[in-house]
Amino acid sequence: MKAKERHHLKENEFVTTTATVVEAVRANRDQFLIGAIAVVLVVGIGGGWWYWHKRTNDEASSMLGIGMAIAQAPIAPPPTVPGATQTPGTYPSDDARQQAALQAFQQVASLYPSTQAGLAAKYQAGVALMALARFPEAEQAFSAVADQAGTSSLYGSMARLGRAEALENESKYDEAIKVLTDLAAQRDTMVPVDGVLMQLAQTYVKAGKPQDARAAFKRVVDEFPDSPYAGEARQQLTTLG
Image 1 (cartoon, rainbow, N blue to C red):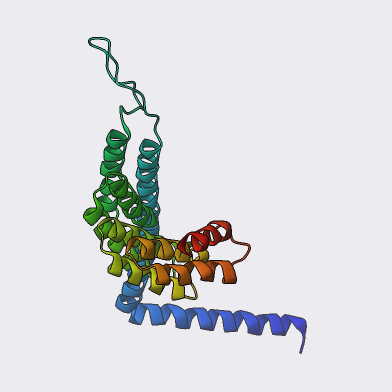
Image 2: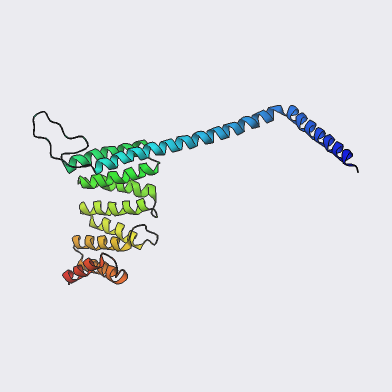
């Protein structure tokens, strides 16, 4: 077949195919229109969601940063000169600083509860409550973080440690011991097991259970001989006799 004839046949095939497509669109223009609108909506919604999600995370992270800056702000004695005011960015006491940080963290957690920054703010609110000796509230804050973050995440594990400390400060030793025992037995915990065991042993001491405390200290020495806690654990074993 000559090249000219082959080219002519290809042109005819293209014309026929194009005509078929055009006719299909004409016959089903409503369906094609709906499909096109659906595609536009999907793309638009997806882009809008991505923009909203990024903006939400950015705003939450910015507010969390403000709270962290407050928590680390300098403490300066209140001015004694009549009419003078507190230096901006400073606080007259640690309690005043912690109270201001707590309000900032609670605001982030309230406005952006499902974001990572919101989760971090909930944890930091628990830390601030501990510093303010508001232990029952701190326990609740840490429990909420642990429930949201899950047991295998860093915030989940840290929140469980915080909850145990809050329970200990409420003299709820048995509850604190259970939390720490479960955490020490967890294989995929994100916090050092030797540190958990040290806190567990010290809680046993406060609970008046020296034998259990010895067992926990001994685990640190035996299982983690290179741990930074090993020296203290040995001293505690000597003290306990």
